[in-house]
Amino acid sequence: MYRRWNEFQGAPNKYRKDPPHVTLNEKGVILLNKIAFESFGSPNAVTLLYDRTNGVIGLKPAEPDAPNAFPVKGKQDFQNLVIHGKPFFRHHEIETDRTITFNGVEAEEGILLLDLATVTSVTKRKS
Image 1 (spheres, rainbow, N blue to C red):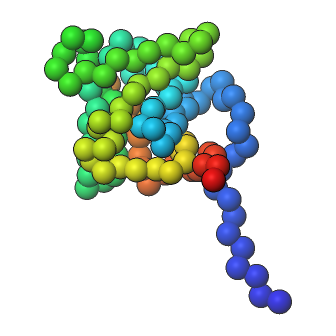
Image 2 (cartoon, rainbow, N blue to C red; image 1 turned 60 degrees about the horizontal axis):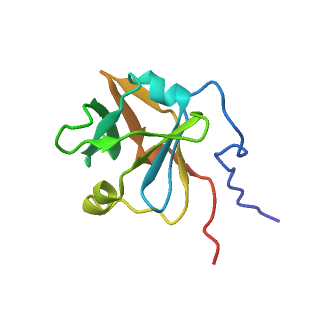
C-alpha cells in the first residue's frame, strides 16, 4: 500500500535551556525564554515591527515610556518573559488558534526576528 507520510517538523514540549525560544499564543501573548531575551539586549520594553512581505515580526528594544512601546514583563522565576501584543496582532491580522513556536529565532542589528514561515504548532486548543 502506498503511504503519504508527512514527518512532523517539531520537537517534544520541554524546557530548552540553550537556544532562544519564543512562542505566541492565540491571545497575542509572546513568551520569550531568558536566552532569547538576552540575545537582543534584555530590554524593559519593545516596539513591535512587521515585515509583511517576508512574514517576519521584529521586537526592537525601546524605552518603557516611548510611544508604541510594549512592556516586557517577568513571569514567575524570571525564566520566561511576556509581551502582551494583542493590538499589534489584531492590527496586522496575524492570527493563530493555538500556541506556536518560532524556530530559528535570532537577533539582527539589535532586533529579535520571529519568522512566521518557520513556526511549529505547540498545542491544540481544546473544544
